[in-house]
Amino acid sequence: MPTIPQATSNPAVELEETGCLLCGSRNATTFVEAADPIARSGQGRYTVVRCHACGLCFTNPRPTPESIAAVYPSEYGPHQDRDARSSHSQRRGRWSRWMAAIRGRRQIAWHGGGRLLDFGCGAGSFLRRMHEEGWQVTGLDASSAVVERIRNQMGLCAFAGSLPHPELLPQSFDVITMWQALEHVHRPLDVLRAARQLLAPCGRLVIAVPNLESRAFRRFGPDWFGLDLPRHLIHFTPSTLRRMVEQAGFRVENIRTMSHASWLQGSAKRAVESGRAGILVRLLQFRPFCRLAAWSHLVSGSADAIVVTARF
Ligand SMILES: [Zn+2]
Image (tube, rainbow, N blue to C red; front, side, top):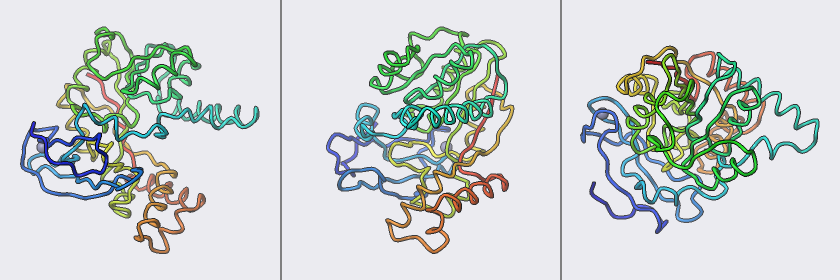
């Protein structure tokens, strides 16, 4: 893979060119360009290209696997334990955990005891909720720091790394979840094929990723929260996610969209900072308006995340 000159002010980040991560074609053109929204200085700009052959959008050039850790700041949101941070009081803590439990049930419609692997488990909030629901949980994350915290502070099983992983045995999980994780990996088909090997017969895979065909992306463009360049390497639509899952050997059971008011609010704040916000976008900085918009996007079927359930 050729290494191209740095396009970022972060000297620890090395960039590489890539072919399409779904079909291998090298024929792609620029789809959108955007800055790293959390770069501390210099704000490197990155490009998302669209494959002419299959339509997959991906970040190109992208940080190499060896250097991508440098674009994740120590305070990166998904690596923080939100449930722990939000427990300002016993009462609020109980309320948050109750709401989180309800969200967990909505995310996994079937439940009861079972073996669950959460790929890209971040700080482990979801793992802890599922453990409390009776699941036998295992976490996997690229960050060894968050894995250590999950092991030492939560007492749960977690491994550092990606898929395939030498510690995980074939057919050893009933459910594998990938919440906002697949868009971060360099070799998504290898990850999905490894997940297929790990699932027991009748096991299920659940994937959630940002939706490039969302009304939010159409409104915010380069300011959309779901782009998160250069940490997001792949930018799925419902059709490209379906094709990738099927190419890895799965059969899609269900595909739907899911709304995040906080993503709309974050996008609106970025649009205001970049000087691209009209009056409607300015209103979306405020909680009641972004909640209303998130609900309308969900009802229209083009909310800002895609959720797929698949089996083989
Ligand atoms: Zn392609």
